[in-house]
Amino acid sequence: MVVAMHARRRFASFVAAVIPCLLCCLTGADWPQWRGPLRDGAAPASPSLVSSLPTDGLSPTWLSETLPGGFAGGWGSPIVADGKVFLFVHHRAQKTPGALPKRKYPYLADDKRGGMSPAEYEEYEKNRRAEDLEFGKLYEFKETLVALDATSGKTLWRTDTPSTYSRFVQSGTLAHHDGKLYFLGAARTARCVDGATGKELWHTTLPGEFIDEFYMSSFLIADGVAVAFAGTLFGLDAVDGKLLWEGSDKMKGQHSSAVAWMHDGRNLAIANVAGGETIGFEPRTGKERWRVKSEANNSTPVVVGDRVITYGSSRRSGMRCFKASADKAEEVWNYQRAGDKGSSPVVVKNTVYVQGEKRLAAVDIETGDELWSANLDLASPQYTSLVAADDKVFYAYDGLLCFAADRGEFRPLIDVKFNKTGLMATEDDQRKLLKLDEVEKKPNGLEESTKIYKREVGDQGPLPCASPAIVDGRLILRLRDKVACYDLRANRS
Image 1 (cartoon, one colour):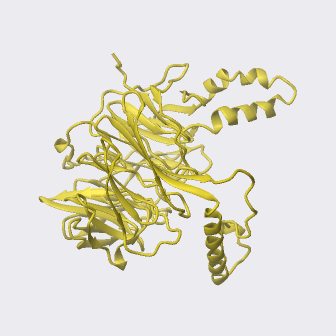
Image 2 (cartoon, rainbow, N blue to C red):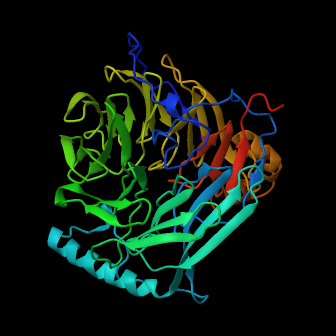
Image 3 (cartoon, rainbow, N blue to C red):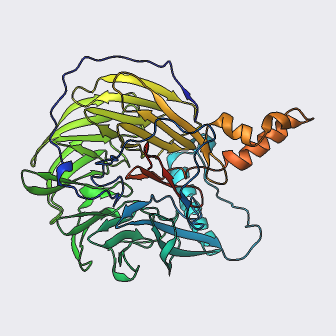
């Protein structure tokens, strides 16, 4: 991930705001749900981490068994709790080998629709979904849960449950709470299993039609309720899975995840809903407390004290900050220089770090002023969220970029690619290991070198759209077909 600097940079004067600290109530060093303990992408405590890697790169402490990702296994992220790493995989495997029939209705990007009218495209999409459903019969689906020993990567238990077709494989990240794992499987089925054994404790089929729908929402456990989107918000009793409430049409959503918020001793939650709005509600009852126009999309809101950060899919939508109370929220600022379909920002101290449209930026949380921005030399980064630990920010997409959480300037610290063994090293070092300079001296050497690099390095690395976990200085990363652990502690003695 080569980062091009020399983008706009502005140094804003500021007075540091005092933001209420929620970390004091946490114990342990787990990453028990999507985006970490507070669902904000930040590790609450961390030992000192390395600021550079050895010249010969860094090998993983361990690699898991093969666990397919992407269209064959989903895009869920790993979580860490009770000394275990957990992952949910929705498998899709072709029943019989051989070439598949040619599609009559392939997916059409915006620039491939040949001037279709809205009505014509709607009819085309109807036919495409029907064809996809028929193609789905050529595959076998199952839902796999795996628990890995966080120290060794050894599989402690694994469950494989028959599943069903959905247009995209399910990819919600697991949530661990009180020794239990919660997740939303295919066909609108919410499940809860014992984290120690993988034994199912309950499952609940959520009301609503299922044809080929898919939902990437990750359960939030708040005030004894499991909350997630499946067309609309639902609240289930976390103990027995009983449906407590179903959101109205004004609480529709598919792929975003809700965030817990304790305000003045009251348990609340915040979620991005359809129509570009964000709501505050009571997780126990589903009662809406406030609603604002945020233009947010599939990202997860970030809550820091009484500030709520939302992020939209375009620069027009922007990243917005609201000052919230139990009964209302008011917009403070709108930063309109980045956007992403599903990536979520991370806050370190009084600075918001955000990725979108091949850009990174640092924004003052109090004023919304841009402190600096930088460009990413990547084809189409999207969905993957930033995470932070030890005043460092990590972005795992195509490779791994680590930069300092510095308000004054963009300072990249680690910028690496991955090979087949999981070794992460700079692009130059990966080329040296493959001896590509020698290959390029031969006839047609450049072409051969390109093929080798793509096979050995370019097709490896982090699973796009998944986000890493950081626990006790270890980076837990989902690669294309495995989970890997890297020890990033500066002092490993």
